[in-house]
Length: 284
Image (cartoon, rainbow, N blue to C red; front, side):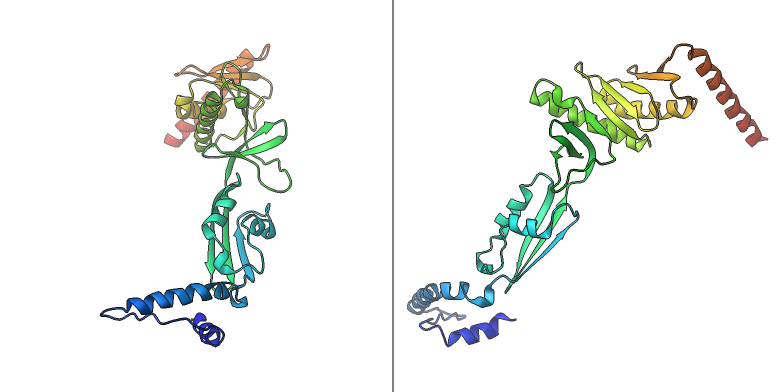
């Protein structure tokens, strides 16, 4: 251990350490008291010795939006600080106070090194405010990473922060995240999930120019499955189907552009016939 040579070297500079006799049997109370007093007198000289001055801070972080220097500064880690004066718990708390930090860990490595490990939150959606975009993780935490603002390729949740009470906003946001998770499980990519003032959920798929009205958020898994099956059967005719209404539990209602009803029915019948023909061929 590197501490032992240091103590041997320090012994010639520090006087009056006293002797604390630790034996299997009795311990001399007088010697212990004298030893403690001598140690308390010498302690500042040990703490401030150059041997324990912080020289290296090793920072590991799973994002490049925050520099190692900024993270070390947030944790209060500066070169020349005695390692004895580094409060690892407080430094960890300072790092975790940043909204974008999911977890942090600060560890002292005697005699002169500190390691820092920071993990960021993983965004599953984004939202807009007057000051620009914010990210949202799976637990509903709204945050912004350090550094330059980014516009990630994520589904945007809008309208939730315009509802009346804070409680209503939080509940709606959690429901929206549940809807997005159900759609992701069904392989449906989403461009935007909007909540209007009547708290209706409107979904805009990533690759379709169609609005989807959702029903009760508690039925998000069933609605996601219904939407996936509906999109698979819809004809690839942009602008023909303008809206899909999933607010009824057992059906999907299509609203088409003017003159598009017959076209949609014809395409659906044609696709159904192709599916049946393939089934007959497979059995043959």
